[in-house]
Length: 389
Image (tube, rainbow, N blue to C red):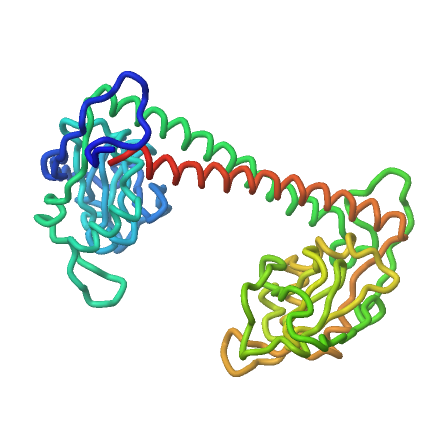
């Protein structure tokens, strides 16, 4: 396969792609605002264009650059980190520190998917010089203009651009669905557990009317410590702020002898990072965890009922108040007796199971949408590698 044609192409196209410099495809412009608040203030970020609330700096946006949809905006200081975008949120103002361009002789939807590929980020980095800090690198505009890309006919550009536009729209749709589900979960967490000073939640399943009882965590948990007696007795697991994970290799040192053995349904927490959310109910099978973790079994409580509450803001605050300042700002050491005194409200086991099952189904739906989104993003990566030269 010639290096001047991509691996995957639409039917009907066979011509080799032409090498072009960015300087041949871009025309810099600078149209300044002449009155205060002439348009909304926009901001170019490493992940897209955004509306900027209020004024960006100082007390005036007079003299800010006016851009329209389809214009290219980039930050000369942070270009190599991906701060480059084609404006898609309407006419607005951007800080004069940005560089702004129009496209010439190129379809913007064709170039858009390529703007933040690893290959292009490397090109931007090589076209920049070290600034006042490690992160800041200043773009050399002449070097930027010399960056080369391969370009097909305008007809093929439009086909490719349209394909990636549809793919991005699908990704955005799945992201919005996922965000909506996460927001709905937040709402249910607020309404399906009692608020401060209340003994019943705002929202309940039909058939339940009894007050919930106040219980201490110490009444619901039983600490255990079963140590491994042979090397690599089970897979090594890790508890993180976002869930349980398989840990490749050995965690530290050269041995996992004496690591704690846990099973599905056991509670695992990090005494140093509990207030940041490092607490999980193990759901990835029997395994080993570092002896630095604390491990518990649940008693007189349905684990699926307590699981949704583990990382609520209310509980994170309780963990923080049950910990003392450690060697660093981030590290706080859990006082186990204070942890055991944390109180939660608990209904009958029947209502616990109903609530637990509801949140389990909701979490499964969220996980399903997350996997779909991750798959789409992986597919996009593959197409980016195979549909451009």
